Length: 98
Image (tube, rainbow, N blue to C red):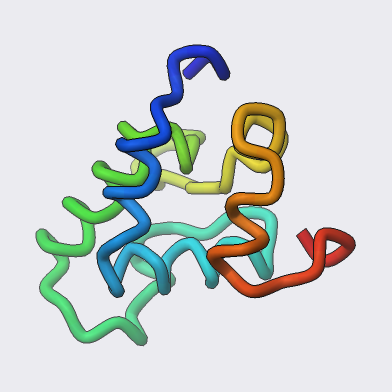
């Protein structure tokens, strides 16, 4: 997704769900994860896939497909360029950690 296509309302709606916020927090601590790596979240696999889809469509996540596996990562640079400081504020992290 191009930076100018990202809409603040879509990003905020995507981040308003506690499960999606936990996914973003988990991805902020690493470079990428598979959907299955988020088994600590107590939701059905189909529900988890839906949450990843919402985050991807909002422009928060990007996906890299390798065989049958989907690897998700945060669109850090794009988010910071379009909405400076937003994700850091939402995640309560210093900009240096982001």
